View 1 (cartoon, rainbow, N blue to C red):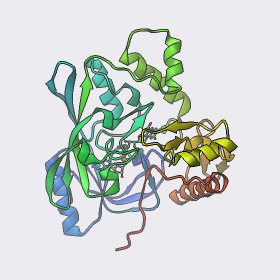
View 2: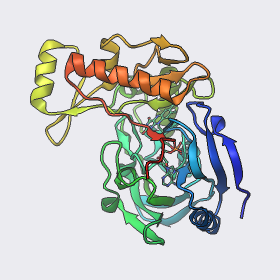
View 3: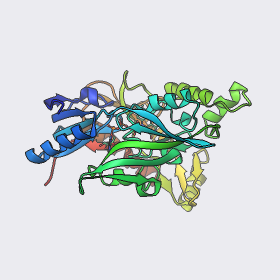
View 4: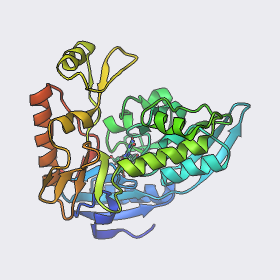
Length: 344
Ligand SMILES: Cc1cc2nc3c(=O)[nH]c(=O)nc-3n(C[C@H](O)[C@H](O)[C@H](O)COP(=O)(O)OP(=O)(O)OC[C@H]3O[C@@H](n4cnc5c(N)ncnc54)[C@H](O)[C@@H]3O)c2cc1C
């Protein structure tokens, strides 16, 4: 078994750059290493936390027990059909590198999801999405270790219960450890460039022909301009989900705020832009000690250096309460909160 390290500083294991420690930490590359690590945790009665790239977590305190970092590698083509190709990638693979690998193999579908930080194994947890595409659109199946039944299970799309930034894995934290993900990618691109600001950027290229690589480059350019780079300033991407409200609620809000962005959903409800609400409430660019709201994108909270999880959560709570007060809309936090005191 690879070495278990004790009292590990997690600053470099979370993109927010919050300095907390894990009681014990192990990096696993294979299923047998994972099973050994889980057996050790059971013998020692340590709680288990699974980590990928740490780009969607906020550390509220020390992470008790054993933190298992998924580092398995491998990407391969499983089968080819006329229109599509089935690929498989191990949980520890870097997500963005998978999107580039797919393009290098002439496969499209992932281009809108370029440059999302983190690992393949975490991508189904919140059904990652960007620029009008989400993982569920390309998803075929995954294998996950079920800690309740001690079995490796295969999940198809339905079993994952994907929803907007949500899945069965997010709703049962700690139960399933995702081992690998299979995606069905396209041999002939069907580009999705209808989502602003990608649409404008695509029109500006003047290209008539579908080209997935150009779309990927545009997405990367937009993201680099809009989102703070976690290697320069700590953050976890969007801090809140975009709230989805009933259509009559959206109409009332729109009457009072005619410029408010609204995205009608197929269900009849309406998705609002959390960043716009936070911006309108006056929080954009605000700094409070070591934490702040990003000046370019109010949906992103940032660590100016030395922020603690409790400062991040205090700021988030004040923003949430203010948005409720002004607009009557409840914001839900997107990243997972880890390191909470264990109550049982
Ligand atoms: C700058 C920036 C931009 C971002 N943009 C986007 C975006 O456009 N769209 C989007 O959807 N997200 C975005 N995110 C959030 C984040 O990149 C994704 O949620 C990503 O999938 C998290 O991957 P990770 O490996 O870092 O997961 P981690 O942060 O390590 O873990 C996240 C959660 O998944 C669990 N988990 C991790 N690996 C596994 C596994 N193998 N099995 C079971 N559970 C696991 C963890 O326990 C935790 O609960 C952004 C983040 C940043 C910092």
